[in-house]
Image (tube, rainbow, N blue to C red):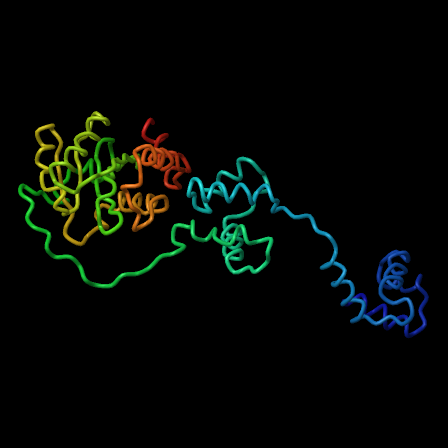
Length: 311
């Protein structure tokens, strides 16, 4: 803008294009093109600046965010339920110039509010974000927990288990479905975050602990299991006969087994609340277990639980 203002003043004073070029330290051809583009009759600096900006805005631009990238994001988000961060990690392996994490977020939310017909296919993508439809609940905590015999609290857990120093220390919880009916038993290895899922037909303590025993036998070397105070885990002492110690979090302290709670948050992306698990088969459950265990984790430098468990 400063140079255009000087051109306007020098033209008004009668300077030739050659002298104007020397004054600006520019080739005379540059000054000539500027006048042809922005002021063939009367040159005005502000008007020339406006039309230059207009041309830049209207000219075709190279778009880094290709349709192929958009399709990739849709598939990773819908089918694998990956977060934008994990999509970015996977995308960088395919494209050197893959868009940023923030760009992915901004695009997803822009599509939600876009009214363009060409964007209709992408409008519902925000629903697949983990916190896309978060709702808060207040109060009404359940207090009728009953009594669980031979219960040891979490602070009695060995230091190796508390510090995630070894494999074989599990956390377990239950995912409920529609009408608070039983859905899934979730067990997680604290060190690697590798997860095992079992479909539940009932919440009976005898039935649930059999499922826990089944998972422990599949793993092979389980040392401890940490439960919450659900009555479904009342027969935990049966694990002691297998040489497995059991421990319990304090009431209303779900953060004390935060790893399995985090995994349940991921599971809810595949099986939302109010899912009727009677319509879910074992093959679907196994597929979700596979996807979760192959999901990269930032804490492991984007290695998966499967890779961490093997190592």
